[in-house]
Length: 395
Image (cartoon, rainbow, N blue to C red; front, side, top):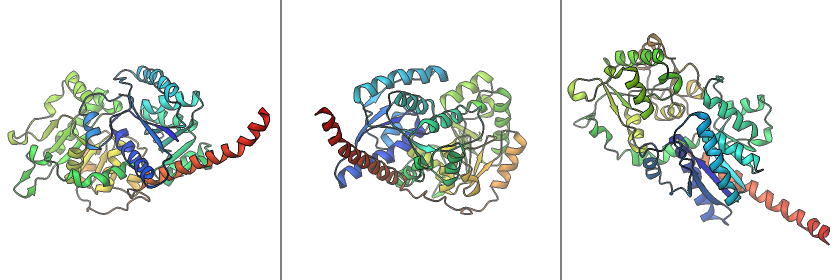
C-alpha cells in the first residue's frame, strides 16, 4: 500500500509522528506492505512552528513540501489543492491519510477524492456544533467524503452515525496525540525551559500557569481579546502566567495596542511573560508542571487531561467534550467574570480527580496501522479473485 500522509500545522505533526512510527515497526516486524510518503503542505512555515517540531518528534524530512504559507482560507485551500493534485498525479498512491481539521486536511481530501483515491481521516467525528468555526466546516466536510474514519472516542462515533455515515467506515482507535505525549514525556523532562524562564528556586518549581491563544474568534475581535486580557491580568496577580505566543496573536496585540497587559520577566515584577512559540519538548515540560492552563486550543484540552493539570477553555464550545466529562477541562467562555470564576474553582480542584478516556493509552497509531493493513490485504485478495475473469475477457 503506497500511502501519502499529510501534515500542515503543529498539531498535525503530533498526530502524524506516531502513525509513521507504527508503520515503520509494522514493516520491520512483518512482510513489508506500506510505502509511506510524507507531504508537508507548509501551512505553518516559521521554524519554531514547523521545523523544530520535526526535530523534536524525530519526523523524517518530508518527501514533499508544498510551502503554501499564510493567506486567507480560500487562498490556502486553493494553493494546497493545486500543489497536492500534482503530487497525487506523480505518486498515484493507494490511500491518502489526513489528520485533524485545518485547511490542508479538507483541501487534500477533496483533491484525492476527485482523483478517485481513498481517504482515511484520523480524528474524525469531533463536533463543536459551531459552524462559524472554520475547523468545524473542515471536519464535517472531510468526514462526509472520507472512506475510513478513525475516532478518538465513542461520542465521535455517535456524531458520525447521526450524520448518516455508514458504521462500516467508522473505527474507534483512541487518540494519536496522546500516543505522542506518552512517547515524549521522558525527553520533555530533560528540557531546560523552567530554568530559562527562572521558574526554579533551588529544587523547587515556582507556581505558574500557562496561556495559549490563537483562534480568530478570540484574537481577531478587539472587545473579546481585551476582555480575555483583562481576566488574565487579574489572574496573574494571584499566579504568574507564561504565554508562548503565536506570531499572529502578537500581531493582533500590537495592532490593538494592548501590549501593556503583558510583561517580559518575573525578575522585574511583571506577572505575565510572553515567549516565542516553544518546541514540543519545552512546551510539554511547561504544561506538565503548570498549576493551570488557559487555552483556546483543542489538543491542549486533551493533553492537560492526561497530565492531570486543570484546564480552562476560553471558548463558548468545544469539539472535545470528553475532556470535560472525564478530563480536567472546564469551558469558561470569554467573559472576564466567568474566566476568573473558573480559575478560582479550578485552583481548588484536587489533582487526579478524573478518569482517563477509553483507549487513550498510547496505542492508537498501532490500531490504525493494523486496520490499514487489513484493508490492504482485503484489496489484494479481491484483485487476485478478479484477475482470472479479466484474463478470460481478454481471451
